[in-house]
Image 1 (cartoon, rainbow, N blue to C red):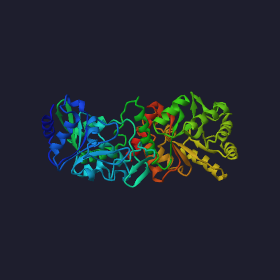
Image 2 (cartoon, rainbow, N blue to C red):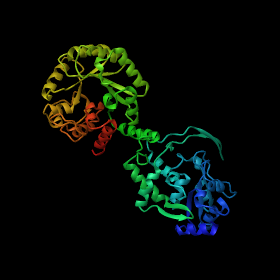
Image 3 (cartoon, rainbow, N blue to C red):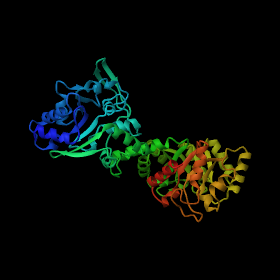
Image 4 (cartoon, one colour):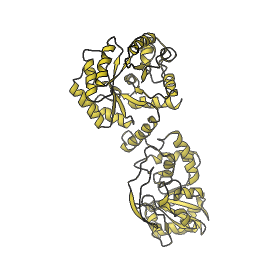
Length: 479
């Protein structure tokens, strides 16, 4: 190709004199070009004219066209060690000035958003959306949870040496390629060809505004769903973690829902952004039947891996129950969750000596019976708490919200088990059974509930930890 043919292709994309273009490019995609990168740059500058501006992301490992433009004597380069832009044309100085002083690398007061405000275009010449740096502006504006603060860098500026870092900086792989169809469907991307190169042209402002809407609805909108993509799994966990931290209480998961073995539990909890776990089973064995040294070692392994153990939970009252309280004290787990039992008074006295809190969960008792037992304990001056099992109240034939919770159990509840089932005991997806779990979550949130919401073991009947978390978040987001 020669310069005239490239100019014709650029004009065919509806670019003209006075336009501002941020070009991302691959020279080789065009085929053979007489004069190489300089010819492509000259073709764009000719079409844009003296009133237009051609800019490129000058990131150090850029294309030959970018490198060639940045090295031209009349090029203006923004000062930024992580997100520099080089530009030639009427607005080059305005676009590039004081980039290093901006709070972020890609949002307000940066070349990327200045070009958007000027009505500029993002142009992808022989490359896809994965090379579109304007997409970083969208991520930064949204302050997406997986973005990080850069390490501090010392660099030269007109004011001398400066040491600085930038928040909300993009990291590893994201599925920018997957945005192309959305942008085409919205009529934002114009697609054409210059030589062999497929060209995508879009107004930067329209691109940013459209994707800000998408990102506000779904903070993981640029993450892929490949189960083997470690980068997106990690970033999605950051999104989930950030969402869970918005709740007043602590969101945790049953260990048995998280996995059979400790490494599996850690991997699954980490992948879902869940930082707390209720330890009920390990390798299929209930914790109340485990030797104390093994249980203490298991807690230590979870804590070392970054998983906070909020409680030890017994599936039954046995002769080993008191040793479970001892184990909690030894490994500094603050709570033990037990079935409501006639032995509760003695167990609470033991727990008080060990500085361990007890919370009792209803098994197949009705709410009036539960209230009467808990009231007796409290009248004795005992610190009395209820882990409210809506699924168990449903199996006892009650409506957990309309009947059970409203039978004065609010004053005792420090934990809600997030499970759902029908009256006949069949576990269902959250919100699809008789446990009135949505109503219970809602009323607790209305009072800024600061206790625990635990994704319980019953969810194994309908899915894994990831499916349960998504079902739970869906309930929260529809309230």
